[in-house]
Image 1 (cartoon, rainbow, N blue to C red):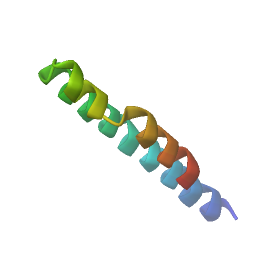
Image 2: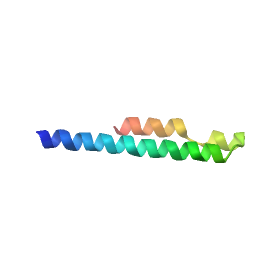
Image 3: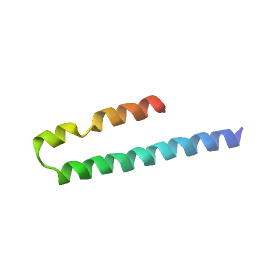
Amino acid sequence: RLAEVDSCLARIYQLIVDQWELNNTVTDVAKVVKSPKMEEKVPSVPIVGTFRIRL
């Protein structure tokens, strides 16, 4: 039972870390590319949406 909880927590933690790294990458890209057209292409909202569905 406890092992199940541990593995579940580990998976959630990994998802949070992955999402955090992903969000940082998106932010960095947005900082580097300052043209408005490119910023529209950065999919920050859909990425968060997919992670919520996977969780």
